Amino acid sequence: QELGARVELADLQVSPGWQVRVEGRGLVLHHARETPDVPPLISIDRFTISAPVLAVLSSPIRIDAVEIERLSIFIPKRRDADEREGEGGEGPTSKESDESAPAQGDAAGSRSPDASDQAEETEAPGASADEPAPRGPSPVVIGRVVVTDASLALQSSKPDRPPKSFLIHNVTLTDAAFDRPVPFEAHLTNPTPEGVIRTTGRFGPWEPVEPALTPVEGEYRFEQADLGTIKGIGGTLD
Image (cartoon, rainbow, N blue to C red; front, top):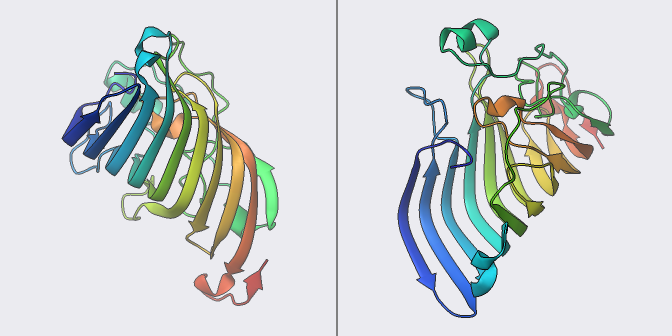
């Protein structure tokens, strides 16, 4: 409901008790603005939820932990103002950025770009300077979310370019909810030049209509960059 998305779920098993355990498979969340031939926003192969049985009596509902295995996220390109007006929408706008990823520069740094940094040389999502639309408090807060074996794909603004894909080895979120910035720690592989990124920061609040404008801010460390994965360049950046 908070994502404004159509949801599919292949299987769900609930183990009752003072500590309730929920196991699910085949969870798919589609985009709030569905587009033909665009992959789902989120696909999860397997997830486990743990919460005390009395959690439903609190407001917001507090979930102790969620574990997610094999997560895929697809962020579509940001629509321009004309496209939004044509649909009667009033989503936020911001200037396209051509800044390159940390892979193109220093081995360590910090920034607050927005996730629509999807030009040819863009390597990482970031934050928008626009204020998110007002929303009510999230009805659910998750104490800890642990994700393993994930991928993030950013659709290019150029039709002839494939999505920019990141392999995310693991990510941990704390006090997670869609209505607020959520602290995270992540370990991922940058595609070009190929190398390891270790990052901490905050993600959100979630922007359901234009996911590419969801704010992200933090610090990163770029290691073991193989410059040979860039045409005409060689060597290693560490």
